[in-house]
Each structure stands twice: as structure tokens, then as C-alpha cells.
Length: 480
Image 1 (cartoon, rainbow, N blue to C red):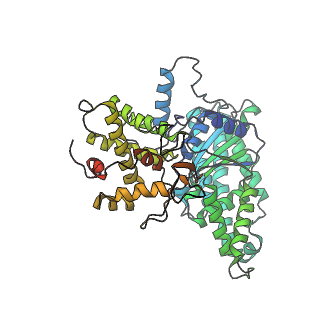
Image 2: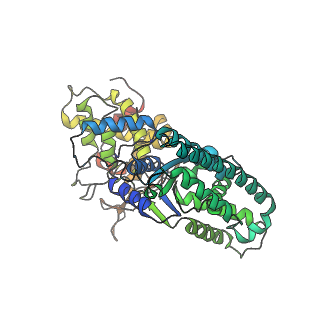
Image 3: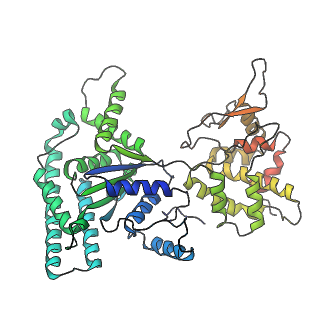
């Protein structure tokens, strides 16, 4: 079964975006803070790992991924255009990885970040080996300096948190007299980056900060605050992996705490906080790349099924079952998306389809058309099981509920027990018609919302004659 671990394999065809972000990081003028926005499940961590691989040719946080990646590269023909480039800027870039979620309970997350920077830069130095005794002494001195500066920042930050609540509520973006600390940090990092032979090799440290959006609002705010106060360094580039909306909500919530009982214009308090939060984030991070949703989720699902279903014939039936014909009485002449455009959700669905595939009848007993129909019945059942639990348990209790689901998909009238679900297609009704015309147009739903009932086009294709009992094999586990 598929797991939710990050991957260095660019299975979502984001190579051009990986290179674009990598080149911006390598060629920008520090200090810089970049953002990579993606809703949960879109593959932010994998994307950041792939950018790290592109820049440095390594990913120490996931050594097993590097091994698999190199094995895959070795299998490809030399010069294959699909082989992702590796370590393009390894001479001028060193990278550090920081998982913000793991340190959200720290009073000063920036101190935890500095400890992680020190630990990973120390590891790099030992791995590379000192070029000379003088270089080794310089490196050790830089590490000790970085450790001492981290202690000073931790002490100063703690005092700041205790003494400046009232001042912070008026200014929001606190600015301490910490220029000396920043200069010393910059020099310590410069010495650690130096290879002792060429100033061109000391360009920048790239710090990837992942899962900022998973932190509690106070922790996320403290981390961003620390970056702004202490780490605007001339040799550092920070890359934030985040859901930007979640981060701005966290900042808005924190701003609300800072404002306290200050009077707000009637009905405008929340709006003001949202605008201030967006402005705060914009000041910290002006350049944000947004990861696109999966453009062909059905194709991605089929690729995932190659690892969960061994029988190629079964995979073929499912592949064909996902294709809604372009000319049907109940569906406008177009091909509609019927799966969620989210890699994480598709992985979970692929695992479930793999488990349920044993319930399909033997393809030796049925012709191809009948097997494709069975695959569609399985897909509908698996989809509702995986993504709409409340709907599934009601369906289990009453097979005839399928008729209500089908009619809802055709008319768009809300289900009596599930008003929150949204259909991706709308029925086009003529001015003189009381019933849908049989033509459907897209409603342009937000692809990040889990409430979208993407399977609607497939249910429409099954038509009105499909007996609810046909689903029992997959709904109740009737043996094949």
C-alpha cells in the first residue's frame, strides 16, 4: 500500500516549477524569504525535497529516498530528457531542513531553528572533512560562536516576550536592537559555509522550513517573528512550506490577542485583523509559489493502482471505467473530472480500491463491457466509502439510498441529511422547463475543498436504470 511519506520522484510533472524555484533561490540577493503554498495533501514536503535535490544533489533527511532516486536514475538511458537534474548549484548552496511542527511547543522556535542549523552544518563539515588544520579550527570556532549566539538570542527573546506585550500590541512587527547579534550570526554562518579556497563557494545557506501551517497559531507567529527579528541575514535564504491561508489565519488570531480589548469599529474587527495579517505576511515573504492541483487526477490514480493491483486486466477495466464517454444523453459532450485533484487523497483511494478489487467478478466470466460496468460500481462505492463516511454508513443500512444520491446528482437538490456536500456539475434548466434539460455545466468548485462530490459525473453516466442492488457486492463484501 502507498504511504504518506515524501518522495524525490516528480510523479506530478512539476519539474519546470522545481527548476524555477531552485533558480530563484540560487540567484536571488539575500536576505530573502520565499514561500511555497499548497493545501494539505498537495505534496509540499515532496516538492521542497525535490528543490533541495535540484540545488544540492542531496537530501540528508531522507537517505533512503536518495538511494531509490539514484537507482532510478541509473536505470534511465544517459541523457534522457525526463531525468531530473541534480545538484545544479551544489558549489554555492548549502541546505538545512527544519520541521517547524516538531518544535511548536518551544517558547522560542527560532532558537530551535538555530540549534538545527548548527547541528546540520556541523554534520556537513565532518562529512566533507577539513581541508587543513587551520580550516578545522575556523569551523570549530564558528560552531562555538553560533552556539553562544543561540543562547544569547534565547535569553533575549525570553526577556522580550515578558517585557513588551503592551508595546507589541501597538506595533505588531517588533523590532529589537539586535543588529549586533545579526552581524555575528551572519559571520558565523559565513565561516561555516566557507571551504577555505574561494569566496565564490560561500554564497548562501538555504533553510527549508516545512509544516509551518501545522503549528498552533501562537507557535507559527513566534517562529515568523523570530525570523523577522534575528535571521534577516545577508547569506541566508529561507523557504517556507505552508498553507498561506492557514498562516494568515494564525497571524490574525495572534493579532487579535495582541489587540486585546482595544475598541474596534462595529463589524470590522475581523476584517481589520485579516488585512493586517495579510500585510504582515507580505512584508515577511513577498515571493510565494502556489503548487497547482493535480490536472489529471484519474491518470494519477491509475498510476498509483499499478502498485496496489497486480492484475493488469483489472487495472485496465478500472482505467476504462474512469473515462466518462464524451457523448451521452445525460451528460454534455465533454469529459468531466470525477476524482479529487489531491495526491494524498488519491493515495488513500488507491489503497482502498486495491483492497476492494478482490470483490470484482472474474473477468473470464463476463465480457469487457460488463467488467467496465463492474469497475464503475466499485469506483463509486470506494469513493463514497473513502471520502464521505456519513453518507456511506447510511447507504450500508439502506441500499435504496443510492436512488436519492443519484437523483441529487441529477437535480442538484440538497440531500436531506447532507447539505454540506457540493456538486462539481450543475444541471442546466431551460426557462420553460421544470426539470433539468439533461445537460450539465461545471460549477467551478474549489478543488481544495473536501466537500466536493467529484464522483458525480460517473454516477450520472450510470444512468437512472442502475438497480441499487448492483452495488451490494462492493458495499457489503459479498464474496466473488
